[in-house]
Image (cartoon, rainbow, N blue to C red; front, side):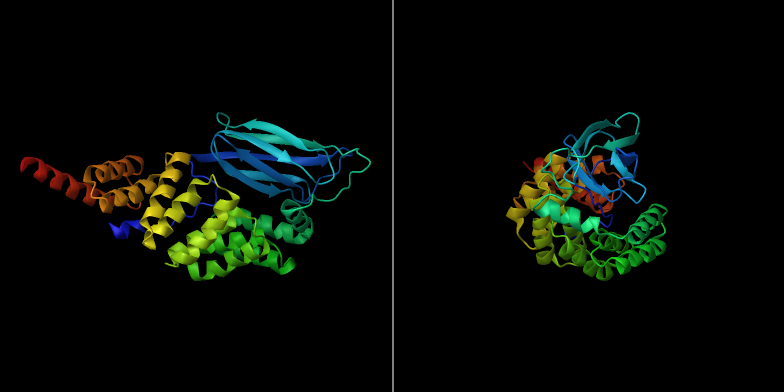
Length: 327
């Protein structure tokens, strides 16, 4: 069973895994005087799906959140010299939403049009310095990613970091693209660079941890994944991948609680059942292991681990049947 505990090759940079990722939210942000609000940070959160992410507007004030779970979200914009903006957006049925947002300046005479203090303020200040040309290259890179043009996307992301050396988001997506191509040795330094520039970016920490799991650098993976969970403690993916790292490090008692937490956050997290099943085998609980392996096959009958899991289920069922008949 050890061979089916390898990291998933499909990289998920989300705060949680959801079986249906088909929705999007797009829109435009303007100031009261009609000017486009460029490089403004928007944060999107769903407590229902334990999902969170952020993006920034382009030079025309446009923004987009793609590949979203079909649920209800809280969209917020704050701390950049204008009144906080909040809205609830439900795409559970429509699968899409278009938002026209007007930001109103903070009229408080003591208010300053600067980012807030602290870590979030540092992120905002860094993003505010991104040159329009670099932001354009970054957007073009994302477009090529969606078009499945890996090499084209890498070219644009490289141009973005050439134009703005602290473009953590571009380094992150370069790493993701290389991971999707199986080039983990190329991806690791790019993801490391993203976390060095922006230590508070949970998705970059998770991506780095996943990459290191793939490279069998489990101790280093655990460090990155732990940092990610400090920033996003309700990430089902984060808990699953750190459970995977712990298992491969032989820290079985640390692995199982994280695998169970991943399932508590996302009951559709099929691979977590494989980890828990193996934990049951270590405890000589064959019926418990069988239950977990069957649940994996129910959730992911064509999954990456399905062939090996089916073989294990057959062996366990045969063994349990023989033990019963021998009584």
